[in-house]
Amino acid sequence: MKEQIKQQLAETIQIANCGGLDAGDWITLIGVAIAAFALWWQIRSLRKQLLVQTFTDYTKRYQDTILKFPEGINEPDFNMEAKENKDEIMRAMRAYFDLSWEEYYLYDIKLLDKKLWKTWKEGMEFAFFKKAFRQAWV
Image (cartoon, rainbow, N blue to C red; front, side):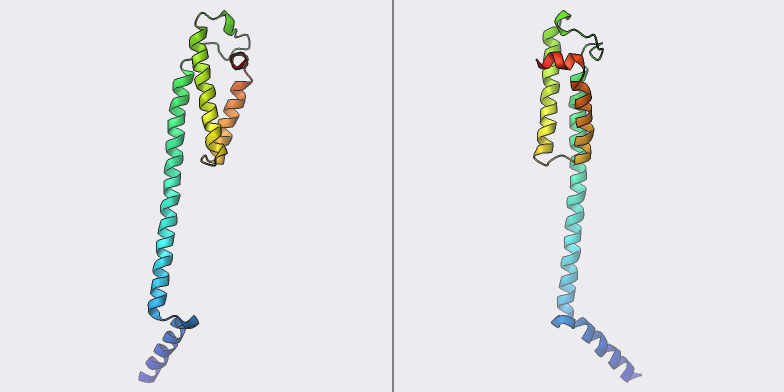
């Protein structure tokens, strides 16, 4: 029985020493691996939080901007020149264009998630094809 225990202990020590590492080295290596995984997990979680925060902030700005648009702005017969409050509409349009530029810039410098950018880009393209937005651009 003692011989079997000694032999199993010797085999365990030999396995632990594979590659010239002793038990302390293995413990250190495992500790470093756990720390690296924990760091990766925290960074991943932080990126998700930042994405949600960015989405929330820009969605609020988008809502604040489009609420300043007049009724009928999406209609094909919208005529900017005929509106008495043209200056107010143009300010809201410029705010929308600025917001769109900021969103593009965040995407361009790789600070914006590709899926989120795709959603925003599709919304911008839809808006920019409307008559009111084309009138405001020129």
